[in-house]
Structure formats: C-alpha cells, structure tokens
Length: 305
Length: 265
Image (tube, rainbow over all chains, first blue to last red; front, side):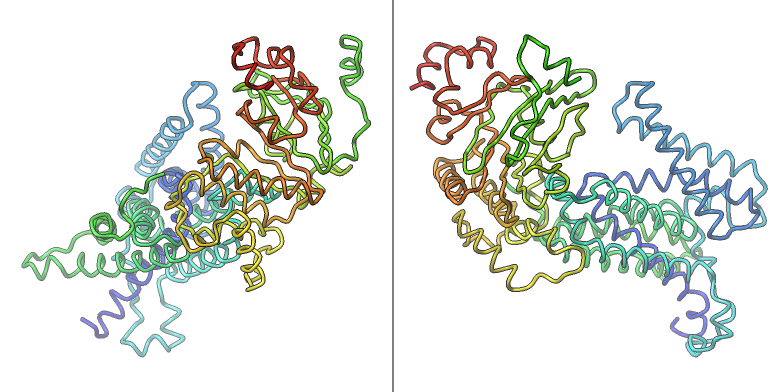
C-alpha cells in the first residue's frame, strides 16, 4: 500500500483532503465562537450556482472564473437575504435559510441542464467532490516527489488548495489578536476603534475562499462538516483559543487521512469489493471525533455563569 | 436643527460652551428604526468627577454610551471628548460594557482578557512582553483579582467577571472611563471594590461616567448626575439634581413616596 501505487493514487487525494479540511477548520473556529457556524454551510451552498455560471461562461474548470462566480453568488446572496428579510419581514436566520437552500437548488438545476459531462462538474461532484479521481499519473514512486517533470503533472487542485490553506493560515495569524478580541467582545473592540466590520468581512472572505477551493475538490458535504466538527471537537478539549485552533487542525487532518484510507481500503478489509465515498467517510470521521470529544473531552461540562 | 431646538420653549438646547470638557454631548439624537432612543440630548461631564447616568429602562442610557463611542451612529448631534471628535481620542477613553453582552464561555484566561485592554498599543504583531503582563497583573491587583489571572473566564462568578472587565478598562490607561451598569448583579464586596477603584481614578483627575440603576446609592457614590428619559431631564450636582420633581419627571411618576424618601435621604 505504501509503494508507487500509493504515491500515484492515494497521496494526492489525501493531501488535498487534509489541506481542504484544515483550510475550512481554521476560520470555522471563529465562526463557531461567533455563533455563525452556519455561515460556512450557507457559503458552501450559495456558491454552487456561481461556480456553475463561472464554468458556463469560461468553459473550463479553473480557479479564477469559479472564484469570481462564487464571489458574485455570495454578493447576490447577501442582497437577497436583505430583500427577503425586509420584504418578508422574516428573522435573519430564516431569510438566510430560504436564500441559501434556494440558490443551491438553482445551482443543481443549472448543473443538470448544462453540458458539463466532459468535466468533473455535476450534481454528484457538487455533493461528494471528486477526491478519488485527483490522481497523479506521472508518479512512479516516492522519488517522483523530487522530480520536477513528474511534479508538473500533479492535479492542479493540490497547489490550489495548498495556496488557499497558506493564505487562510497567514491571514488568521496576522489578524489573530483583533479577531480574537472582536469575537469575544465586539462592543469593546468597537470602542477601541478596531475595524470590527472589516474583521468580520475578512473572516467571511477567508471562509468563502476555503469553501470554494475545497468545494471544487471535495464537495459540499466535507465543507460543511469541516467548518464545524473539528473546531467543535477542539473546543471540548481545551479552554485556550490558541490550543483550540491547533487541535482543530490536528482533528481535521486526522479525519481526512483516516477517512480517505477507510473509504478506499476499509470495505476491502471487510470483504466487500467496492470502496465508499471518501468525502462521506471523511465527514463521518470528523463527526466521530466530535462524538468522542463530546463524550470524553475534559471541557465538555457546561459551566455555571 | 440646532436653531430650531434653541427656540424650543425659549431655552438654549444646543450650545457650544463646554466643548473642551472630558466629554461633551450636544443635540444627540439616536433612533432604532422609527423610535427615538435619544432625542436632542445635551450633557457635559467634567474632569475629576464621578457622574451617574440615571433613568428608567429604555431611557437610552446604554445607547448614550454607545453613541459616544461611535458604536451606534446618531441621526444628528455631536460628541466631543477633550475638545476633539471622539474618533480622534479613542485611546483616552476606557469602556466597560455590560457584563451580559459577552459569552463568558469563550476559551480564554483572565489575564488574556485584561491584555485585550492594550490591543491598540499592541497592534497586530507586537509580542506581549513581560512588561505588558506586569501591567495587566497590576490592574488585576487593583480590583483584587490577581489570584485568578490563569483562570478560565467561564469559572468566574458574576462579580469576578465584572472586576475583570474593570481591570481591562484600567489596562487601557485612559483618562475618561465609561461604565455600563457595573454594579448589576454583583455581590456587595465587588460593588465596594469597584467603587473604591472608581474613586481612586476620580482622585487622580480622571473622569468617570457610570450608567447606574440603583437610585438608593446615587448620592453616596456620585458627585454629579444626569437624569435622562430619551431626552435630558436634569443635570448637575447630585444634591441639586435629585429632587422629587426631577425624579418623577424622569421615571414618569412611577416612583412611590417611600422610594423617593429613601433616595433623597
């Protein structure tokens, strides 16, 4: 399993899965503490029609048209939420729910009707991603990792996801102090003159970048699970924000690796001859980790006010 | 707007004197939706004094602090601190929000909350040095919480939470202190400790403004009072401002005689 075949068939998807999970988990920590965890969910739904339109306009599955489409869709969603909230006199949560499920449904219809059969963009991929197909045909073994020619044949999702993960990590590190402060006490942050709105926006943009990049590789199921499960599990393990974010990264990576391996090889070990969806298994593993943390985590007891 | 208000019942509602005071509010109007929370409010807070902002629920007390700090945008009116627009002098103003506005289950320690008071000075990337920690500890000592520095904030009682918030405000090293109901739901020991800290601030020439809900303690804690109910009812030294007439006007005649007797001593 750890030979040439592993490097070509399993290493890239595992790395992409890890990076996607980590890129989502980091902003997920702050969204969770701000009681906005569903924003990650909303974004991953809302961007679908944007990604499809980006593809239809550019006729290619590449980063910029899809990012632009996703960004446009997010803007439309924000406007629509405002319109629904005012015109329908609905509470913000309900307005969000209506808008993001409708936009996702619209994206699914659009996807079904358009000719995307030549590329990895269809309803199934929107949900489960195409992690298993992100293979590295140029690899002949571990030595290929040092072979420039072979490296050029890596699936483009890998560098894309790596850059996204790097940006999310870097921006979070840079904005750490004001992000923590405005998450804990927004009123005080504003009284200090911190740009609270810009910080919230930066957080949502980070989450959106992670969601769009990850969506393309691993589908919306992982995106939703990864925004919430690793940070929620980490919260139950520690009372320090730094440790929480660090642990959420570890949990995200563990979910991705074990999820991928179990999906690919687990059924074989049990005597079945089909593998199961990697995205589904990764999300399941993250849920399992959360369940364990909820059952045994040292900080799971509700505190008295 | 100002001219119109000046003409209202023949008195000057908006004037320009006192604009160099630690805090000067002129013609402040804030609305939530269509309902005015504050209307054409004037107030001046002097240096070296402890002032109480008093009024019934929904009178706009918290809104006044929020508008002063730019957390809500007024429809009209101006707020000056030390003769400048508040935006320019935010580093001279410390703020203690209502305790209940934050999630005390947040994963952080007491000392980290106090260090948040130095956020402007620390900026984005400056490391927290021993010197910062020492100052934060000194602030905790002032509120009697130095033994709780490493505690997770979720383990604190309400009074302890309030002291930590005050320590954070002290860490801001400001000249003007705005506190929103610091005595709400705290134990007697905490109330005493907070009053002592506020008095020491006043004695060192700082200006202390407190949104206060306990009418019985106004005259013991404060020198000056601002009575509001959406608009200003009375303002001045506690002894002259707290009268049965002004209190009944502020509270819409809902105070019983026994209450009045207790407040007015």
